Image (cartoon, rainbow over all chains, first blue to last red; front, side, top):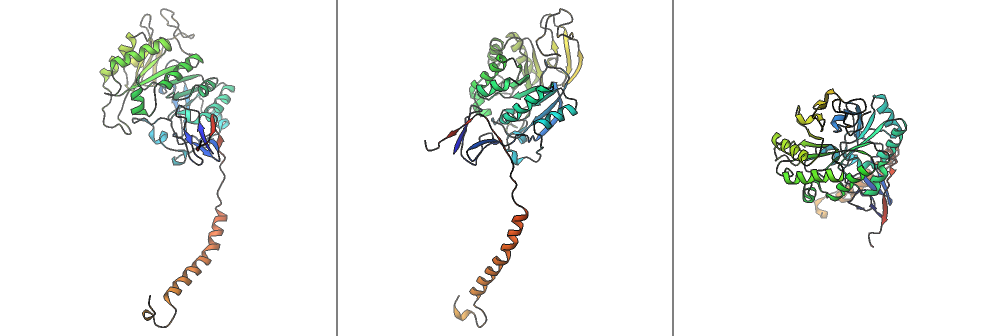
Length: 325
Length: 58
């Protein structure tokens, strides 16, 4: 008996013995199995800034895991060796059921677990079960995703998530279809769902020269974020480096990132960052009221943190949105 | 092969047939023993949420 996977908008019809488009959700004897449950292929300890999350427990170490598989197929994928493979194709498969994962995170002095690198949507059940246990011992759960997921599964998962950085790859459905193998609307719905469910949300937009660097599109995207998610939503513009099947394009010029940042700030967004550019002024957090440097960063490293303990500007006392303690 | 191509001894066709037969009979128990030693392991896979049965014909 074939099954229909209802986790993501692809809604793959999966005949017996085969896998969905993500390669890791498999129909065995008419039952859908999450083949990478408890079997991560990547485990690292990263700083929070690498996710990137700039307004959530700055500087804290995050136990970061991923399994194989992804439900998008971005031509510029940075982790294609992990995301564009099925679990059985991986050189490295660890065994870490949720209780073991929590133990590992605690042993390594981490305050949070990040489900990241590939897209954790495809190992949904593993994320959910691990997150429930993590909550019980006071660990935070962080979901780094492209947001290509159906509403109902996402709403249920949000109950155990604390923060997300979600990619908004472009404000253009055609780009999603041609470069990522997805569509725009479900991603916008996911962003709104995260906001509605009270999960701390930051958004990343990777700017690829000639493909999604149009300033009018960036302006529309910034206005949508301002109106639908709030002007205090941090937006990270990230620099593209030639990767995977998109080695024909150059890295994003610095001026493009500067212009995009300015455009988004002109549209009313208060915290706009530039990533993958070491030492850029857009690595740091400033007070939107009086321009005071609140958190200085060079790459993933925090050089100074001037926020008050309750997350306010030390000069004007303005509260800065985020989860600081 | 015609009769004039072989002189005396065993017909080459029969010889080949016998060789294959003996080889098969000898290797079967060895294969069986190997299969018993390396029997497949059952890996438990977690059941996924959010799916429904689908009738491909329907």
